[in-house]
Amino acid sequence: MMAKIYKKNSRNGSICLYLGKRDFVDHVDHVDIVDGVLKVDTSELDGRKVFVQLSCFFHYGKEDLDLISLSFRKDIWMHHVQIYPPPAEDKPVTTPMQDVLMKKAEEGAHPFTFNIPANLPCSVTFLPAAWDKGKVCGVDFKIKAYIANEADDPDEKIDKKDTCQLIIRKIQFAPDKLLPGPEVNIYKQFMFSGKTIHLEASTEKEVYNHGDPIQVRVKINNQTNKVIKKIKISIDQTADVVLYSTDKYTKVVLCEEFRDQVNGQTTFEKEYIVTPLLANNKEKYGLALDGRLKDEDTNLASSTILLPGTYKDVQGILVSYKIKVKLMVASGGVFGSLISSYVTAEMPLILMSPKPKVGPDIMDLPPVENN
Image: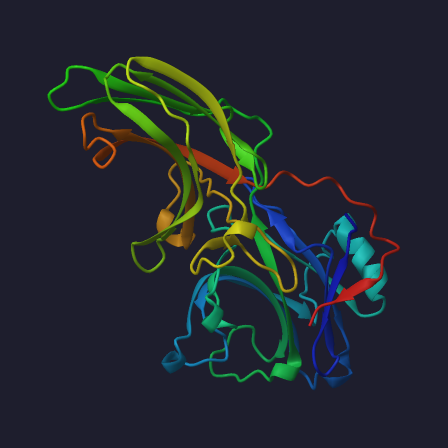
C-alpha cells in the first residue's frame, strides 16, 4: 500500500495543512497522537493569529444548511492550538512524521500535535439513501486551520478563504490476541411432547476481519418426530445512537438459507461459511459504515470496543453484531408442511479491520491535494 502525504490549502494560499495519514488508531486505553504540520505565509495576516482546531462532532446534513433544511451538529469534543505567533514556550519535540512533513512544506512550516482522549467515539457514518445525496449522518473528526484574532470567539466571523480543513478517522483494529468464539445451546420442548430439539451453535474465534469468511458450526439433536426443513443463518448490525436519544437501528447485513433437512430421531452436524460484505448491502439506507473519507472506499462499521466503566453517552454511536441460527421445524400430520415453528440461537460477533502492514517511507512521495 503506497503511503501518501495529505495536503490542503486555504483559498487565499496563506495557510496549508500537511498530514502523513488520516487514520488514527484507538488502542482502547490510548489513541495515536495526531501529528501534522501547518505552513503559514505571514504576509497577509494583518496582525491576526493562526490556529489549528481538532474537533469530534455528531452531524446530520451539510454544514452550510440551516435547521429548516434538517441540518444538525453537536460538538462532542474540541481543542485549539495556536500556531502563529508561536507561543512563548519551549520548542516542541517533533515526531519523525513531522520531520518529514516539515521538509516537504519547507519555509514557514510549524508542527502541531493533538492528544485524542480515549473515551471519544470512533468514526462512524450512516449510509445515505439515494435521495439524500450530500446528506450524511455520523461521527467525524476534523482538523481545521484558520486565521483569526481569537481561538474561539463566537462573535468573530472567520472568512472561508482564511480556512482549510481535513477529515480524519479514529478507528479500532482487531486485537492481536484472538480468543475462542462464543458457543450457545438452545433446548426447545414442543407442546404435547416430552421430547426436545437441541441446537448448538458456535464460531471458531471471537473476532473476524471485514471480508473474512465466518465459520458457523451447527449441531442438532432432534429427539422429536418433527422434521427440520431448513436452516437459516443471518447477521444483524445494531447501531445504538446514544448521544441525543436511545434510538437503535438494526439492519440485516447477511441472510442465507440452507436446505439441509434433519428428520426426527436423528442428529446433524455441519459447518457453514458466511461472509457479510458492504458490497451486498449498498442499497440499505441507514447502514453504519466505518467513517468515510472522500473518494475512498470503506466497509461495514467495526464493532465498538470500550474500556470497562466508559461513559457511553459521549460515544455518539455504538455498533454491535450478532449471528442468528434459525431452524424451521415442520409439524407432523397432513398440514405439517403448512404449520411451522422455529428454534433460534443468537451469539455475538465482533467484526473489525486487521492492523495494516507498515507502508514504505514517505520521504520521496509527492503530496496528494485534497479538495
